[in-house]
Amino acid sequence: MLKFCLSNYKDIALINNNPDFQLKYKISAKDINKLKFVFVIKKIPENIIIGFIETNIFADECEIFHIEILKKFRGQKFSIFLIQNFFCFLDKNFFKIKKIFLEVRESNIIAINLYKKFDFEVIDYRKNYYSKPLENAIIMRLDINKDY
Image (tube, rainbow, N blue to C red; front, top):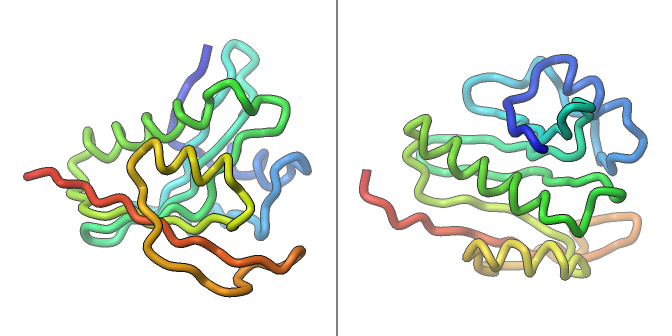
């Protein structure tokens, strides 16, 4: 069984200290506020974090900075569960989001296809954006056509 929830300081510490998560930078717990969120999915009853999504909301736009599922849990549709529950959170909490943006490595075909399933579209590229290895970023956007 899975549980989707807003992270707390303990969750942030567990993510930051877990070498299996591929973090470019540590998530700062002090930056979490009413506009920046980190959500986790936990495997119940073990209560272990198996994935997370880090986002920022400003006005009617949202940027997704990081989505990750631990390698040993990939291929089980947990990323779909994570994204669907994040969208439900936005809706239930009356965020009037019109656009959601994210960037993804050009070689990450699995992630690109996942985002396309949620109707994200490629809108631009950033040449040599990523390092180790040097790689282009694809910028994707989801337009939410919802009358609030």
